[in-house]
Amino acid sequence: MVLDRTRSKRSDIVDLLVPLRRYARSLTRDSLKADDLVHDTMVRALESRANLRPDTNLRTWMMTVLHNVFIDEQRRKRVEARHADVLVQLSEEVAPPAQEGQVRLMQIRKAFEDLPEEQRAALHLVTLEGMAYADAAAVLGIPIGTLMSRLGRGRAALRAFEEGGRKGKAAAGSTDDGPERGRSHLRVVGGN
Image 1 (tube, one colour):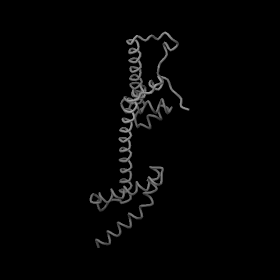
Image 2 (cartoon, rainbow, N blue to C red; image 1 turned 90 degrees about the vertical axis):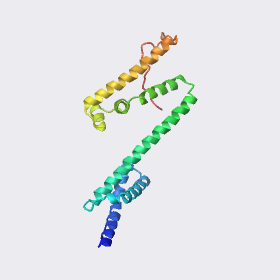
Image 3 (cartoon, helix red, strand yellow; image 1 turned 30 degrees about the horizontal axis):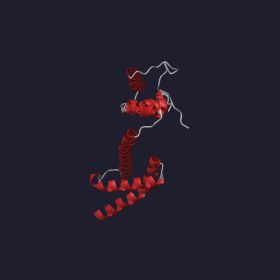
Image 4 (tube, one colour; image 1 turned 180 degrees about the horizontal axis):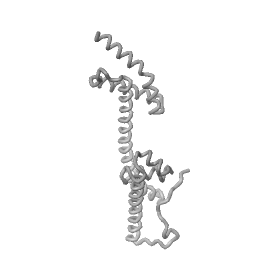
């Protein structure tokens, strides 16, 4: 009897491979990554099979395992990207660009990256992606008022950074008597 249930479970899992691959492809948008995701899901499911209750819907459980494996992989990639960014920043600090514009852009990027994550996300969606406030709030899963608050705090922090840069120039003896006087140093730079 136990052997029949084990065979039944194995055939049920084999029957789930197609829907699992379909869901994995929709998440990864790449068939090779989807296959890897299904493989990792199967491994995790086998490791966690002791936690599976007899009355559990196997399809729902496997889809949940796949989704969790995908989320874990995305988090791992973000951590790796942060480490890679730190390495890039260290290399940029060792050999700073010779052009003043690139140096300024790097400073602005650093100020933007130093913002708290929720302010960075709000500013990115609204200012860089050009999303409407309601759409950006929906993406972030927050009320519009909260989005507006985060935008205000993020913009204020960037203005404070900019004001600190101007005070630093004045302290160094630099004068702003040229055509740049009164204009903000933060500009949107279009890529080619």
